[in-house]
Structure formats: C-alpha cells, structure tokens
Image 1 (cartoon, rainbow, N blue to C red):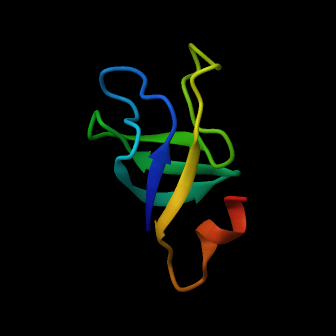
Image 2: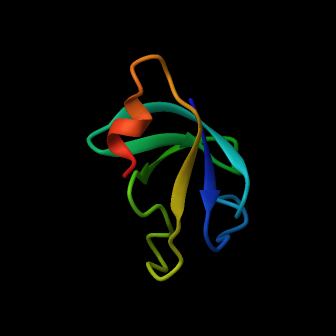
Length: 76
C-alpha cells in the first residue's frame, strides 16, 4: 500500500510534502508508515503530523491500496 503526504513538511526525518510513502500496516486507526528516517512509525490516518507541533498536520492521498481497499476504509 502506498500513500502521498499532503501538508507541511516537518522534521528532518519525518514526512515531506508531496512524497509517496510505503504503508506496511494499519493498527488501531493508525497507519504504519516508513517515513523519511527509513524506519516505520505510526501516523494518524485522518490528520498525520508532528506530535511536537500539532499545527503541522496534513492528510494522506491514496496512491495504491490493497485488494481489500483497507486504506479507502480508514482514510476519509
């Protein structure tokens, strides 16, 4: 599964506006994303952003879903 982050870039190794990220799973309403640090972290499916700076949040755009359309079900 793949998603594009749309929003303000934050952190050196977090999320970058317009960049496509691999989503390796969905856990408790969160997306497990391999971010710019090349590690996997949980991000909100609705308003992904920085925990330190909540005003720096964006949204996900689905690039590639799985056959069950799991991303479409959680990203609204």
